[in-house]
Length: 257
Image (tube, rainbow, N blue to C red; front, side, top):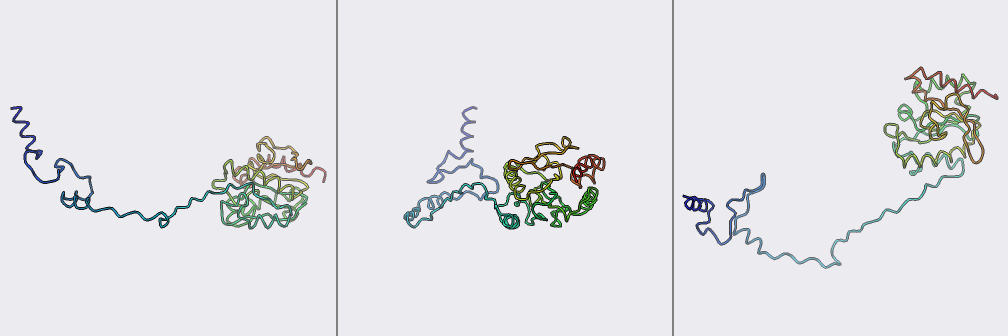
């Protein structure tokens, strides 16, 4: 019975008779969705065709791999007018890569007060100007409370476009840090109002709660610029309880007036 079973198996496998010149995979199942295997004679004919000779090396397509040249630090203009034009137009301005529309500074160098934020808010990016919308109206009221207006100030954001989610990575932060100190060197403000937690951390190395009610000294070219830090007006609209902390800092700007 065992011998008979073996014979039946080989018979079913198709090896008990000569079928063709080429072995056929009777038990091989073609892959799903693939065309059926070629007939043995056709496959043999195709396999027997000689392969074309390769082209000479001089005629072969050459693949040129260009190595990207390592970029050094971006050159920052030393002249105030050139710097403003550079912020508006140059493709390598740090912080200009996140949006096609740039939100540019407003005002002149050596202003009595410089308003500086890290990057535009959503309303600012949409309208193309700093401190737009309801947040801008609140800022105007805050400036009036300390006896000044936008027209008397120099307003700027460190980055001229807004990063996705209002956050940037370490490399972008390093480029912006270099831009920060160069911008302050050229602006030469009498005093500095840091607006928002991000710029407070960058310029003063402090968290916003730690800067509350403190007159900060920002080192600049061996000298010091007096500064205070407040939450962004957009944050104050969302969390009115923080207005008290903002006023604790703002009223310091009235000292010595």
